[in-house]
Length: 298
Image 1 (cartoon, rainbow, N blue to C red):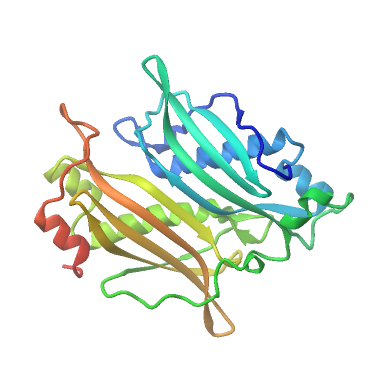
Image 2 (image 1 turned 120 degrees about the horizontal axis):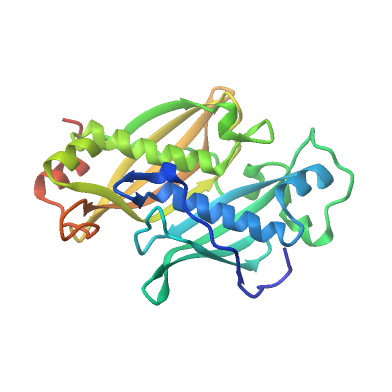
């Protein structure tokens, strides 16, 4: 972690997790965001700022608070991903993932990631936080001022879903981590589609289509904690050029009888052909699909 923008650092290649190969051998957006996060962690470890050291020596928890990614190309399970990380400003990074395509390496993800160092009351604290890291230290995620705590009004036809924040959704025995909301976004989209008669299985069987994501962002606004009930809402906005639809996720918890906005997500979704000569190519959405996406539940 340095004071000014640094030279991009190329890291050792890695591969996606097998868990992410759900349709054919393609990798979904969730596992690409996992690769972005893991690449950033490797970069920070190379600067002696890995999460273990930050926690055990400085008493702070490394928290990804914002990740925005463009996904311009498909990724396959056996692709060897070459990550590149650059610090743009204190706590702000650009992560680029490339995969071999013929004689070249092609970008498969371009991400901007913001991190904070959250004070951990029960953590060991043997060394003061270095001066260059002090601007990143906050008492809580809400102290970053990314949101006002107010939950946006409900949209007609939105999908509502509540999940319990289990220990495996959390970091440092307490706070819900960024990747938990990435998983929630994936699931709430699937629930939304199923409610509208567009389940993944049905669209594969009837159209040979599979959902694809070209842009995604997940931001933390305030802390949710272990055993909180996370009330999650998803709705669809505009359909762009009959090929993709914009979706929004909002998550809140109850605090002292009032809702507190803890996370939000945005996603640009479309469909690709799942088989045949056009496998992987975006399709034009037909009228029944557009009506189901923007209408109420059947």
